[in-house]
Amino acid sequence: MATKVVMEALSPTMEEGRLVEWKKNEGDAIAVGDVLAEVETDKAVMELVARAAGVLLKQVSPAGSTIPVAQVVAWIGAAGEAIPGGDDAPAAAAPVAPQAAAPAATPTPAAAPAAAAPAAAAAPVVASSPEASNTGGRVKASPLAKKIAADRGVDIATIAGSGPEGRVIARDLEGVTAGAPTRVRGEGGVAVSAFTDAPLSQMRKAIAKRLVQSIGPIPTFYLTAEVDMERANDARAALLAADEKGKFSFNDLIIRAAAAALKQHPNVNAWWMDDSIRKWEDVHIGVAVAIEDGLITPIVRNADQKGLRQISAEVRELAGRAREKKLKPEEYTGATFSISNLGMFGIDEFTAIINPPESAILAVGRIEQKPVVRNGEIVARRRMRITLSCDHRVIDGASGAAFLKTLVGMLENPLALVW
Image 1 (cartoon, one colour):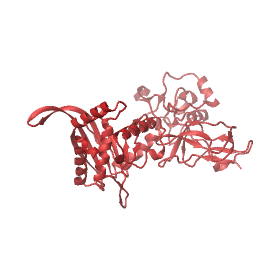
Image 2 (cartoon, helix red, strand yellow; image 1 turned 45 degrees about the vertical axis):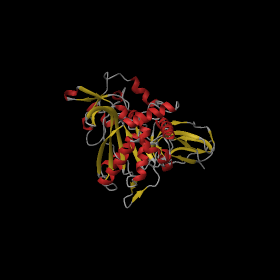
Image 3 (spheres, one colour; image 1 turned 180 degrees about the vertical axis):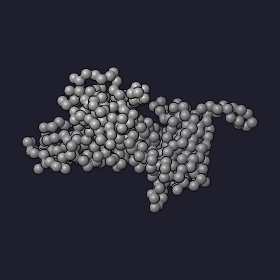
Image 4 (cartoon, one colour; image 1 turned 60 degrees about the vertical axis):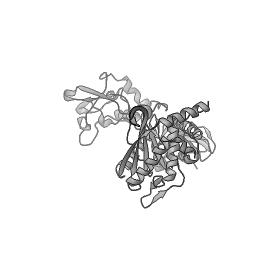
């Protein structure tokens, strides 16, 4: 009997996946553990492997499709075996616009007549609202136009029809794709402005969902401090001079100092669990890394037990694989505290959004020379502003301020980190 291949939950928070590329073709022999396809989850590109042996009888969903977890994407069985029908073999999901890393889906034969039709205009005109070409919630469109729109992932209700009574016909879809620039119709039917609808990646969907969960329900307050980084700069320069292979950054020093401070302030190294507060004994720091589709926080585990050289090497290695979407779920889930540094972009200060269930996140600005008063004289000193976002359900103002004071002290006197 043929075996279903379903979209598996390849990460703890995954609800759907985008099928980036099939690694096996229909008719190929399959062994248990073979990689069938690459799937983009909300955090990384991962492998969908075979759980049964046989022949790949059918690819239910094409590359580029976004498929809910547990839905059938393929069938494996004996050569020539029939595939069960009904609900066990759902139709393929409409493909989204391919990302740069994914191969474009092969055009279907049904799209050919549209290419042969005469061009209606240099650029397609899209209705400013569905009512412009459809009434009563019913789309007026020819069967061929509906087929072309479905194949290309285009919402046909947004297309201005040129057929009788505003009916959408095949030539109205010439040149229209899910991610192509289109034009909004203004008064008198004149195309007045252009736009591009970029399909959401799985990561961007996850970011949007997490931010809604965070900024609304979490009662957040912010604490900002300015740090004198002169000694930190001197210490970094001395260490780099002593170690020709050393490449550690100020951010590595901040991670190390934050880890040490968290050991002294366990209330900040905590999660909100709805009916309890979980205070962690281990310090696992998530380090925000910007990638093409958004943001991910690979984790330096047991950061309080590691030196600068080890922290630096881990951060570089994790960040590199994060940008390639090669992180494993355990490498980006389970942080007890997070750090986001935008100093390299010239940002003076900012507030970061807490990543639940964590109770705090540190936002780090740039290091710059400023005139400050020391011993009654104005001198230039390297200064850095840091902001702690706190979940007030877990952290009170005084405990958050105490943590920040400890952190500032360690950064201003980095020798304290070696004791």
